[in-house]
Image 1 (cartoon, rainbow, N blue to C red):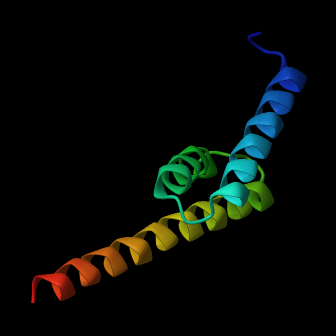
Image 2: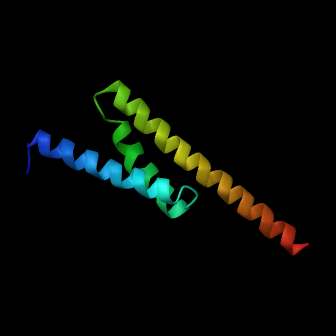
Length: 83
């Protein structure tokens, strides 16, 4: 499979679709958001296409931001219960 660009593109597209489907079905699940953010962030730093890099970075940043907000709300609820 090494060096087959078309197969690589197909695998990437299929993987992105699977991650997007998972987020669509569980949009608030950090166990879905964090892996997608991780998978998209690292390659975004090395993708030769600025448009694809920007898109992937924005999706990853949004996923991480959503998990940070969820974490903050979770911590706030725990502290409220302790009172």
